[in-house]
Every structure is written in structure tokens, then in C-alpha cells.
Amino acid sequence: MSRIMYLKEAAAYLGKAPFTLQSWDRAGKLKAHRTANNRRFYYQSELDQYLGLDHNEPIDKRKIVAYARVSSNGQKDDLKDQVAFLRQFLNARGIIADEYISDIGSGLNYKRPKWLKLIKDIDANQIKEIYVTYEDRFIRFGFKF
Image (cartoon, rainbow, N blue to C red; front, side):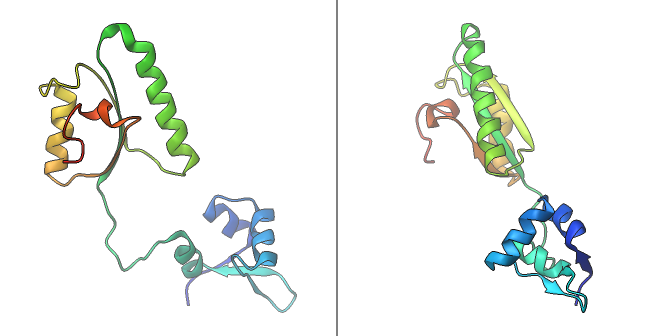
């Protein structure tokens, strides 16, 4: 067995309120164990399993990147909007981006320095996922490649 966590500690570990874990216990979503005096507790291994963590698997250290691009300096406000949208989108899904890349240049220009560095990182298997607002923000043609 693994370490025991009581309700408050387990809730903090999951990033939830204790009330949420109590509701989940009643609904059967994440069942709690009970002490002799009916106090809820959880095993850390079960919480890790709920979170999808497997301590036997190696941790994926590749980066999650959000990429935003506009074609010209006159569209800087649009660039800020793209970055704000990506932040909101990722946060709503509980995804933490390691890096936000903002770029100004044509989607047909394959010599954008930030984009080229990102492509090199992809080639070196250092990138896990890339989030963009639209496919053509990353590259005009060949997105599926």
C-alpha cells in the first residue's frame, strides 16, 4: 500500500476542494476509504491512478507549445488575441503550456526564426504537442505533414 492521505490533504493533492471529494465519494466517482470513526481517507496510489500517473512509466519531458502568428506588424492586436485565446483554451482543459511562441511573418515564409527553431525541436523529439488557433497560423500549406 502507499501513503495515506486524509480528505483535506487528498483534496489539495488533486487541486480540488474537500467538498468536491465528498461529493465524488457519495456519487461513487472516487470512493474514499473510512477509518473506524468514519473519517475519509485515500491511498496516494489510488489518487495517482485517478490522475493518470503511473510511477513505473518514464515521465514525458517533451514540451507543450502554443503557437500564434500574424502576417504583419499592423496585426499585433490580433496576435495578442490569439495568445489570450490559447491561454484560455488550454487553462479550461487543465493543460499547462511550457512555452507560448508569438511570431510575425507570412505563413508562406519558411525562414521565420522562431518557427524554424520550433521545427528543429520537433525534429529532435522535444515537442509533445503544439496548439494553434487555426492550421494556417502555423503554416499555410502542408499542415498535415
